[in-house]
Amino acid sequence: MYWLTWRQHRTQILMTLGYLVVIGAVLLVHGISADGLTGDALNERFVPVYEVVSWLPVLPVLFGTFWGAPVLAREFERGTHKLMWTQSATRWQWLAVKLGGLGLMVTVAGLAFGFMVTAWLNAFGDSHLAAAFGNSGLFAISGIAPAAWWLFGFMLGAAAGAMTRRTLPAIAVAIAVFALVFVGAFRSRENYGTPEAFDPASVSPAELQATLSDSLIVGKVPTGSVMQIIPGSHYWQFQWTEAGLLFAAALVLGGVAVFGALRRRV
Amino acid sequence: MTDTPILEATGLGKRYRRSWALRDCSLSVPSGRVVALVGPNGAGKTTLLHLAVGLLTPNQGTVSVLGEAAGSGDALARIAFMAQDKPLYESFTVEEMLTFGRRMNPKWDNDFAVRRIASLDIPLKHRAGKLSGGQQAQVALTVALAKRPDLLVLDEPMANLDPLARHDVMRGLMEAVAETGMTVLLSSHVVSELENTCDWLIVLNGGRVQVSGDLDELLAGHRVLSGPAEAADALAARVSVIEDSRSERQATLFTRTGPVPLGPQWTDRPVNLEELVLAYLRKPEAAALPRPALAVS
Image 1 (tube, rainbow over the protein chains, first blue to last red):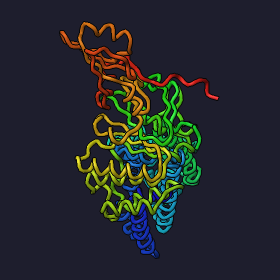
Image 2: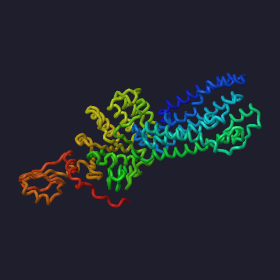
Image 3: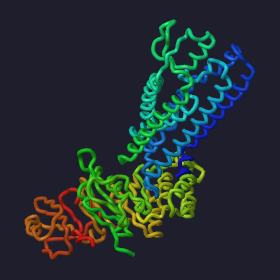
Image 4: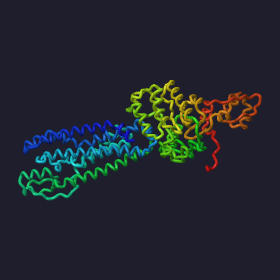
């Protein structure tokens, strides 16, 4: 069963591994090159790569379309499930290895990616641009969040594939649902914790910029008065909250995928 | 050998949304037979086969393979199935298809599989999706045979094959049957190609089993009687008539009967498989089934 899953999905697995290596190498070289830089020079060095990296929060949708959607839908489309389900293994074993094994790989890959991005951001730690908490894009690709996002994307695609039983409609459904969840998650993030009052007048201008770029600013900002912010010290609490919600959603979607696959409509 | 039937269905029914694809289907197939499942399109043949291999679960009744519920792990290890579209993993090479079979099945006979592919001149390194239709059917059949099943189920194995490929596939199948003594259950709507290969017949019509029995016994148990129309009613009262066609003077009765004493104006002749199947299909209310077995001990 492991051999089959590997043989069927080795293209995706190797491609993902390849991309991870490339991204890791770029981030590593770029991070090393930041050594010794400060102030505007550091910011200028950060920006070109950041402009590319800032697109990476949409990566989970690729796991939905290239990993998740075909994983079950292609079998139903080609009729190969009739071949697989009449071998000596039960379809539960088949599903467990396919969804469980691939899901585990996606999660580990996401963890590795999050680790690399976090290390890269740390190399630019002196730049206010590299603050991962105030930037919703960087928040989603650093720490443990990408593991949860990637697994969510994969299970979303798998569930859509199991329900539609066709790859292309499954991809369409996965993209649409992902877009909604993506926007919804980015907007609801400030609700993971309670905001604190912060008076901009109480700190120096430099400190103000550093604090605000690493904080979530809640609600409207009346100039010159007290603001409601969630400071960067809540980073890990928010990471775990977001990851927990997405892992739970992935688990539910995994259940949907199993239900859809075992409905026995041959 | 045990007397457990290789395939047994009791009150089997399968419903798709509102309509029944198969209903009240009871049959019992002894081991070692080559069973032909025939019937018109939409009769429920594929549904019955999918139930037998556990791809579908019944809405009513039960179906078992050698006493194990169809679709259970024990039953799955004893059956092999080739679906009508003969699915293979298209991106796999032929060799990888054999690896798939070996890794999925504990009883896999790899020597047999490799030998069979070699004897068919199918290159092991070719991708399954690039093979001709006949070769794909042969690879699919090899994967099914090398599993060494007790019951091999084939859904329309001859469909989409040219005459030469049909012949080759059928011959390969019969060689394997002779070698292993396994039971084969195959469906077809082309009756003529089954006459020399099958020894058990199941006729399915409108979701119901009309005929199930040993082919030789069925053929010996039916006769076509021809004679004068005016005497036909008297004869029809004595024997079971499946089909009754009369012209003004001549009557032709397709009857379910052994040898009967006939008047001098009457002639009788045996029936062939095609006539037998057609006669029953034209009369959906007629049936030739073994009497219900007594309570199973």
